[in-house]
Amino acid sequence: MLVLLHFVVLFLLVILGFYIFVADPRSRGHQTFAGFIAFLALWTVKDLVFWNFPEFSSSAGWWASASFIIAIFMQYALVVFAWVFPENSRTPRKKLAVVVAPGLILVPAALLGLLWDRIDTTAGFNIELAPLAYVFGVYVYIVFLYGGYILIQKHRTYRDTQRGLQLGSILWGLTITVILITTVNVILPLVGVFDLLPFSSLFVLPGALIYAYAISNFKLFSLQSALDQFRLFPIAYKIALSIASVAIVSFVIFQIPIVWWAFANGMTPDAWKKYLVFSVLSALVPNLLLLLLIARTISRPLQRITVAAVEVSNGAYGTEVDLRRSNDEIGLLANSFNEMSRKMAADIDQLKHLNEHLVRSDRLAAMGTLAAGVAHEVNNPLASISSLIQMMRSEQISETEAKENLALISAQIGRISRVTKDLTEFARVRPAARTTISVNELIQRALRLALFDRTFQSLTVAFQPTEEDPTILADGDQLHQVLLNLFLNARDAMPDGGTLNISCNVEPGEVHISVADSGTGMDKLAMKKAFDPFFTTKAPGKGTGLGLAVCYAIVTAHDGTIDITDSDTGGTEFIIKLPRFKK
Image 1 (cartoon, rainbow, N blue to C red):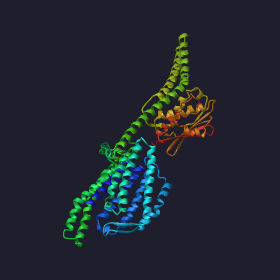
Image 2: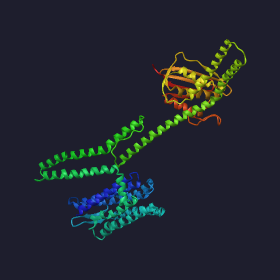
Image 3: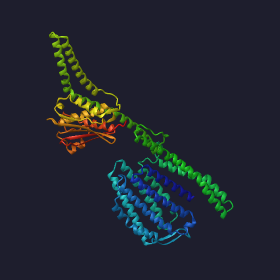
Image 4: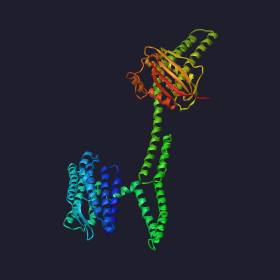
């Protein structure tokens, strides 16, 4: 009966410690409680072996040494718990060193048997303690009282709060435990009554249950707590349950029949050989089953999540993990990953729309800047056309002169048509489409549009097309916008006029386009932040700070780079590098 009670207590302690630890493994309070339960389990194992097996009880010295040592380590666990709970604070190492220092002498004394003068189990359990044992006992109670004092002070601090209720319950549990243990292990043995010593671990269990109940925020025995654990059943619980289940089932199905069959005719050498061989063989089946369960529980789901994560990192946004629904950390991870992937795909799609809107807004801003120049380019031909028409109406002209005037009118109309075509082509919104483009033609097209601006017309523009006309695979409209932005920025950097040098160089595998002005230049900080959205060095109301950000986005989308440096003429030089198209 006693061995059964010890097994029940040991089983409950292991389950209790495991439950509290897995509930919050990062909590120092939960970690310390698990340590306390581990020492209490050792205490139970010590009593289980000593009081139930005569061959171990014949020498009681080891039992007494273990009792003293485990008792002090349980008090150490209590003090550490009092320091860290409920704030989850760190253990003060200096204080811990002071508390543990006497144990460095007393624990070796217990191991060497210096705490008792005589211990005998021949006619019942009997022990005569040495004076050092009383010193050890006083030290144990001092450590216990110190831990209790810390908890009482914290209880006063957190009075009338949830933490205060937890600390109050823990104090009640400790009080009940110390009364029961002191009665069984100290008071009764001092008067010669040792009958309850085998049951000492049973008297610690109620206090441990109250202890655990308080730490778990009063949810240890509640139905809601059970439902919460069912909804999210940690994978550590599943693995532990799998291992325990396989061990128990394999013991019942294989080990018991093998023992009965092997030793049916006595414990002969041949019987031991049968037992060892078939025990090893039978152990393979549950171990393989255990590996299968762990692989299905952990390895396969993690592999699928890893593959999905690699696909997302390669740009397959929106990829989801196809897993059977599970109520553990892996199931929660898979659901969170799927939700994150869906949101990422939606956010990237939204960013694409915003980028398109930004490019469109920047293009409209450039059109506004060019509006005055365009009006000038259109008004002059219209004035000429109007004058010619009036002349043709008011005067008698010959057929030859009429034809000449009509030719002039046609030329002016063509001029207007080119202006409006260039502007329309620039403003038109079309889906991004990459085609082979001549770099020389691209630069000339952007220059032609920039020359609509009167201020830009006052600049000295130097551009010599390259003899080898390089081609790139790109969206012409987008790169046209980049170059126009750079040309207009150069115009703003040279309000009193200056020189704009444009060049195109062919490098191995790349085409370099340089736009350099002789303006005021940029300092190092401005160069570093130039491509940040809404950063501008222009006066308030003169710039949005989006132009260069749009340029950067377009160039990088074409697998190129855009850099800023000081130009040879004292201004700023922008260098665009784009992959060359090989025919």
